[in-house]
Length: 431
Ligand code: IMP
Image 1: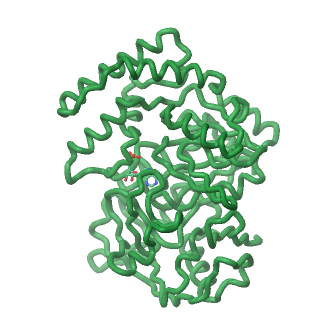
Image 2 (image 1 turned 180 degrees about the horizontal axis):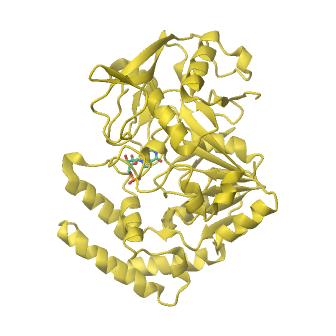
Image 3 (image 1 turned 45 degrees about the vertical axis):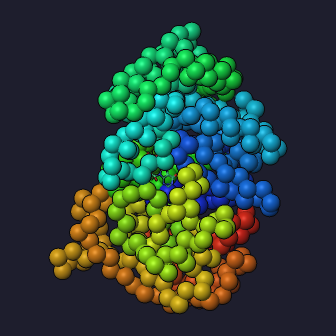
């Protein structure tokens, strides 16, 4: 397949970074199509831990060209910080390796201020955003007053930035939030424009040419299906199309690219969520602490971007089946199986119950999950540490049964299981 799309099947944080890293070993391009530095993808290679927010994780592989697509919203300050960090770790971020779409939108300090002011104004009904200015930048895009990367090449870029800050100040004033001085923002962004120039390209043309030449394009979704602006737990979602079809519009690929695509869904062996919104299988108490971890390990359930503790719960099979349908997932990778070792039994939500009826599909999507009660199946756990297992047959029988049950519920095969943070802690399943 020349187009491989990796998507999160839950609320983000499924461990997509390390799965992308696995597939990127065989890819020529690694592209992102949505979101911005609200994402956090972690890849562990020996003693080196790469925490990436904007740049696709595939860049760690020397043969890969990284692409930031038109569907993204870019904070140049975060981008240059990340480029510097990669450079220090010996990863080239030269213009020929890091391509930025002219049509991606820019995030500015005014968007950050507005994101925070809007959250404060929502009070207890806040969304729990990452505060990275994502929503306000996509709002500007939809209302057709956004700043695009291509604007950095225009002679009046300064003026446009000044107008944008002045315009945002009017809204900040209405929200009783402090206004920003446009001058330092203009100066800062002028500098970014100079530095970004050699990276700016029509990445749609470059990806199209690559695919026609038989190159493999690996596409990295950020966040997850249930945070999609159309198909997620609206309004507790992010502001972009996180699902696989969004990869086409977010990268400027036509439908013919999809003919030769595989969609790989990443699902954690249990369920997590950061921020507000519904979560039917959420756990509290000791079991929640056990699944979340204390925060002492890099893989414990605390946000990569914000450090917030994640909410945790049992795997929700109803929402997983929904994610398979919405994305067109052809195979699944299951992450963090090792975390479940030592539990006496594991619950899996296989359906919802409402008014005495059992449902396996949602009548109106997942926006309002409050009327449903999860129906659980309880499966035996396993005591063995699975972090050293590399073959499916060597997994404890109970772990195999749990995975088979997930696969049957989802209706698609499992191609990969991760059992630890290291690059090689993976079980690849022969088809
Ligand atoms: P925003 O994307 O910052 O506007 O945040 C909207 C919602 O999406 C909040 O609940 C965030 O916690 C959540 N969110 C955004 N990005 C991520 C991510 O990469 N992983 C998990 N949750 C995210």
